[in-house]
Image (tube, rainbow, N blue to C red; front, side):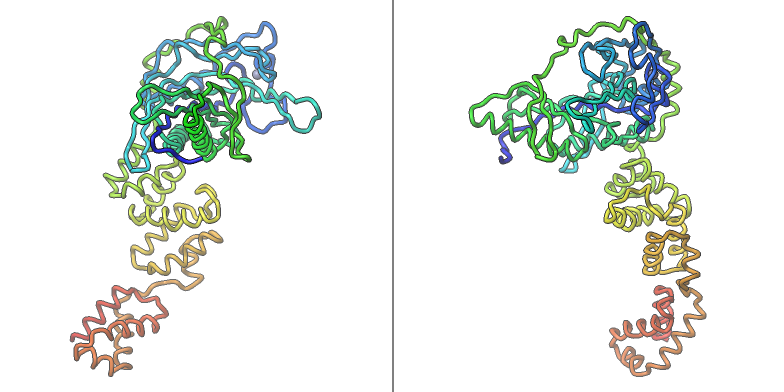
Length: 481
Ligand SMILES: [Zn+2]
């Protein structure tokens, strides 16, 4: 299969983000991941006859926060709806969701495309809904286990407009959305554990064509990389099919990451298949404008605003600002480093090159770094004050990265102190000049290249600890005197 430049790919994403509320959406059961099967279940989430749901207020606040962060409009009156379908891990036989009147509509976020262009991606809606349980097919012959721990866990379903045009853009969108949810601390964004899940709607059309092609829905995408691979595969599959005279069937397809292929799972259902109706056990959700205003005032600084501040106030490059705001943890690390006296540009450079370079090579995240922001800030301050050279700083940083430890102790233990005392340096310069009369004479005759040799001798005499700027200045002065 080959990529055909006469076609355009159209992608819309549906993300299910598990909210980190302490209890489930309609009952008091815990939402902690990894408990023994069926230990976090009660009559409400197991859907015993006659039980009644009580809406989790923490979830509503999280939905409002998320809506504000994507500049969506918050409905002060939204409704829950019953979505009817049978599934073994859905004991109620229906899912409580929102349909016609979702809590959030008309939002947006911005991504940077491959060409470096900032692009707006519309977010159609965000609604609250309940998660189903899990069917476990391993460890039993000819049957499946049902684990209801996840039943009743609160989700936000975040539906994008079909504004994405490549796998790359889809990846950027997911990274941005996940980063926003993590900044808000409403979702841990862990795709492997299933707390941030994505389905992709993909269609293709000839360039210049305005109508959308028939779309297929891709499921089972458990990493951003898999989302991107699946979209690429699907776009090529559809183009090949159209080019060979076939047509696209609207269906749901299951991605197989091991085989790098997808296969049909079921015909794509339409909304009417679910026989949605207003949830009779829950009144419409009415939110006071005051509550929305209060939450708006408490919203943290989000990645785009932060990046802009880093560029405008701290003079960082677009690239550095993007890297440092890509996650809340990264931004906190950077800001803490600067608060310890490091110059922002130096801190940005050391974090994005020295620290992230080493972390990436080891397959680690910034949270796993042995070097703390306090220590990095102190190291950079030592360098800025000329107490250590840039070369020493890198050696010290290597030790800090491998074994941890604070820079002052390492400087002492390894004797890394730089000599900036001008009197001490002047004495060494005098000695070196006295020892090398030939070179001094050559210099005075115009062979200024010997300067490098003399600097080398001085650095050798100080075991590399002399401040190079001071050495140069003193040497110049003495040679021209
Ligand atoms: Zn429960």
